[in-house]
Image (cartoon, rainbow over all chains, first blue to last red):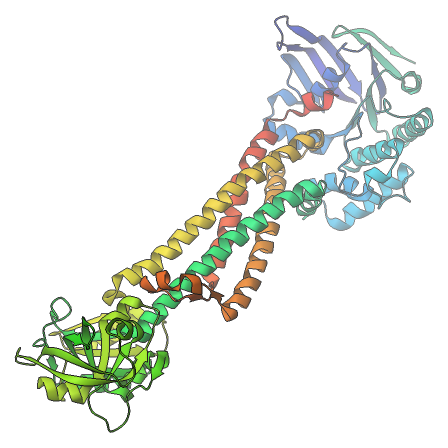
Length: 227
Length: 407
């Protein structure tokens, strides 16, 4: 089942005198349950493509369909709500709320979805246990290692029951053990629960785990292969 | 609820920065609140003294007397009206005064004053003058031609208790008359102008010298149990008063006092508003710094689906907490000071002469009322809302894609 489709996607930045074509005519489709890595050199357009798919940025040209919904036709408010209900995000810098505990961080997104307290608490603990942090639910981010924080971020992304997860360089700040641990968790979730993961990455360890690798250069797809 | 929790915890992320703002608000509110309490205390006391020593709450005169106090403008047959006044449960006393303008003479000096012919038993029910005696007595029984004068008159005319003085005035028919009086007591209120312009004699002595009868009077003064419901009570007494007479309450008799009371309250509200307005800039600065420091976090919240409305509410709560903590602390200290100094008083004896010339006592008892605190709560909420506008605008302009992609 097709979950994401982009048609003739362009994103051009005009902040300097010379326009920069960060994404330059990308046609792409991603199926439910894929474990896909988007790779390419710095400045190739990986993060811009992820931002466009996630509705964080508007394309200059082209269309993006998520679950057959053209997100270009949605208002700002609708896009925010759409993200809340359909997309999970994992960022390079973890970006947890430092004043909340691990459990509260995971619960927070469900509170925005207006789920009841009992359900929120149970699911937050379930998600944290699934990423191996059942014993750290009451720790604040400052008390967790980088790898643990990123696992909380994954738990948070999963808690909202998204259609897919966009992870922008999720292992860039992690040591090799934490990277391996995190990748194993995400791989398990992908296999067991058929959750779609899309990564932008430079990390060869992530690339090795991915089943589909899309290489981007100068805003265009250079190679799209399965392994 | 979660937003309030986050907002509360957020303000303690940078404890020093938040404490600086909170302390600024605390001292600002303490300054504003204490100034208010001192000024309201001084004005309230001035009003209280004016009512209890000078005008009482309500007075009745012959029409035109207040504009032109001629001895011939007297009231007659007022006993029925006085009896009706006394039947009102809020009336604590009624005094029936005979007034004449006089020249006071001593062997050393002369001066002008109004002679108040009073019945001491009645007068004690409407005036606290007898409590302000600094020497002598408030009239001795069975003695004629006694006079009670103020300390400033005594100093001016170089008189002591038992000294003799001559009062010269017009009689009922407009003829010049007078008499020798012996000083029975010397009083001192905090209003120098009142003290210099008033002397008190027994009404029966004045009646015999001026030819007025027991049934004729210039002024009826009525004191109420308290200062509440002035408008309604005044209206009730005016209904009883015959139309030919001029009935006024203390605010109408002393419009400058009523105006001072109202103006002080308004002025003090503006003072506190200006203090909060100035503090708002400090709060805005702190909040802007906090927002810029947390831009990645805010961008993340927007990215994962937190709408603008919730981000705005979170910022408003943070601003409100900063403002409210400082305000509550400032007002709590203020209230403690007011409770202490409201009993002990602030002694400004060094400035007593200057203050008394404006009718203020040299000891000020700060006081504050519940309305002031309600106004402050409203102003604090308004300040927090105003101070959160700029941080909200800054947060609204943040684009998650740009911020999350930057290092």
